[in-house]
Length: 280
Image (cartoon, rainbow, N blue to C red; front, top):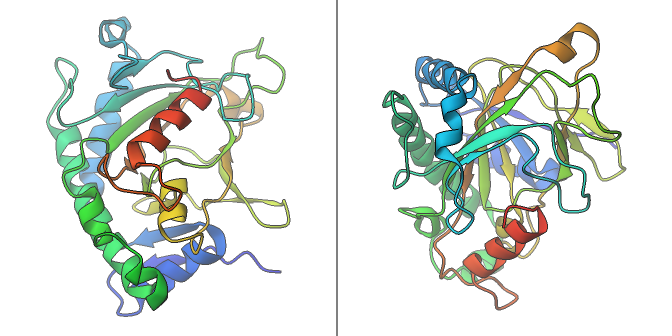
């Protein structure tokens, strides 16, 4: 059985069909020739590289109640393990703190990716079976428009420590929580996705592309038509182990009151998952 993770040209007429089919088969798709500025992405990476190298980052420690701010190294673990991931990160919300001295590039990128996400959700909805479309409580784009839960997570994976704990990896295998995740190409490879046979596949990391994957919330909303696929970030080997890796996914979360098929609201599900991964 082939693992058909597609790279989809945003400008082509058949893009909605190919994009949704890739999500349906693999939980992932790669989008090229999209409207998000590559130069802007470069600027944001540069800004946050400086932030993570400065001890003043400790002035922005996260708030457990609102999940905003800086999360120090080894703050998070995957759902089924107690071993902490080898990463530090910052949760940026438009209503939250932008660290002092940071440019406006981050808010600009948040807006550009949010607009792209709205288009991608419209694509998905247009390709769903009619029975699933009719079961939606509102258009998918409306579920995330203006949501205060959508966040940009800027991650820094430092060089691998020489005394690294056994089984500790940059990001243990997991599924994402929200509706969609949009990930501009990271500064280094390492992202892998698991297929239905348990085999791991490297996700392309080509400059200028955006990787998109389905989260558990969208799986529930689409009655499991679109899978949330297990993925991880592996530790590099050899000399590459001493190089940092930056990535900055945008996690699309719906409004709190959006109802899931099991009767829970989106926010009830979200808070449960935060507890499972050690963030509350």
